[in-house]
Structure formats: structure tokens, C-alpha cells
Image (tube, rainbow over all chains, first blue to last red; front, side, top):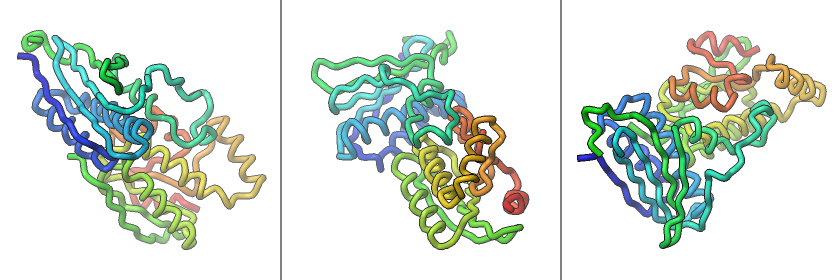
Length: 146
Length: 137
């Protein structure tokens, strides 16, 4: 059986800690390497924070986080009911400008992109957004059942 | 495990008086404003040299970087125009390290976040508390 776990909550940014706990606990259950768990935690926390701050504008909103095995890959999915926004199209900050001379903030998507192997956006027919994150070849072939 | 941020403050005497923030927990989107607010309070109370002890911070998101950047700007706000120009030249040629804001003992994950974003280029990272306090002058 492919591994799968999900967390569904009506969240504000105070609940990001619960999202990170879910990632850490699920990562342990899946037998993931701690270094990989740290990267998954960073990517999903940043993506969830963007939804809560920009999508829901700091009002409580529905957030669903799924972590699952797809063959040898680990897939993370964040779904929300906020207005449509495709973060994969957002331009990255100009990293040729030294950090102190850039405007504060705006590093979230850069950290996400560096923490994973692939990021895709889907717009569900029922509205909202679904961000899909992929970490390749996480599971060894002996337990890659999905 | 993920945990909320707690901040305790101590005053240390090196070559100059140094305010040390001992941070425990995660610096994330829900806690970075508290860090900024405490830094602002310390600055307004006369602190000009700030050491952030990150020994017990397991996780820092981009919101933590935002806080570091805003605290960096706050501590530089009183610098003269000439000092600001010199600082900008140093930042551009990669030689500048903040004399006002330094970090102590970030974890491997926090260090990765600092280096990905280029923050380790202008913030000194120390591993010894006494040496860190004494490095301010």
C-alpha cells in the first residue's frame, strides 16, 4: 500500500506549528531521512504561510495538506479555498542584488524552489488552489508500491 | 518538534554593552513580528548591539529572514550618511558584516536558510557566546 497522510483544518498563521508537526510526524512514520523532512517542512510551511497571509489575508480559511507516496516519489499537496493564485508563475527576487539592498521579505518562494524537485499548480474545478510539490526517488524500490 | 517562540533577554558586557536575545522555538510567520517588536523595544531603550542566540531555534522560515532584515535596518537607522555609503560599498563588494547584529549557533537547517538567501554574507555567525559578545566594538 502506498503511504498517505492528510491534515485538514480551518487555519490561521498560529496553526502553522500544527502543519509543521504533521510533516515531522508523518515524515517519521514514512521513514524519511531527517534532512529530507526538514526540506519538506520548509517547503510546506512556506507554501501554507503564503496561502494564509496572502490568499486568506490573515482570516481563518480551509487548508488541507496531504503527504503521500507515488511510486518512488514523495508528493506534498496543499489545497485551499482562497482566490486563485498560481505561485509557480511568481517571478523570483533578483538574487544578484545583495540581500540587505533588497526589500525585506519575498524569499519564501525561493526557499520553496530550492527545497524540492518539482512544483506544479492545479486549479480545482470547485475553486481554490492546489499546489503540488514533488521530491524524486525518496522511496527505495523495495517499498515503492504506489 | 515544532514549538512556539519564546524570547528572553540578557545584557552582557564586552568591549561595548551587548543585548542578547535567547530564542527558543520556531521563528515563523506567526512569531517573527514578536521578534521584531522586542528588538525595537530594546533599541528604543538604548541597545545598539544585538546578539541573537539561535542555539535553541530548530526552524526558521522566510518570515525569520524578514525579521532579521528589518532588525538590521533598524540598527543601522542611526548611522551617518557617510557610514551608510561605506556600508553599501562594502555590501556590494561582499566585505561588509554588520557591526550591530550578529548570530550565535544557528542549526544546520537555519544556516541553510541563511545561506540560500545570502544573509550569511552580511551577518556574522558565531559558535562561542563569549567570543561573540567580545566581537562587538
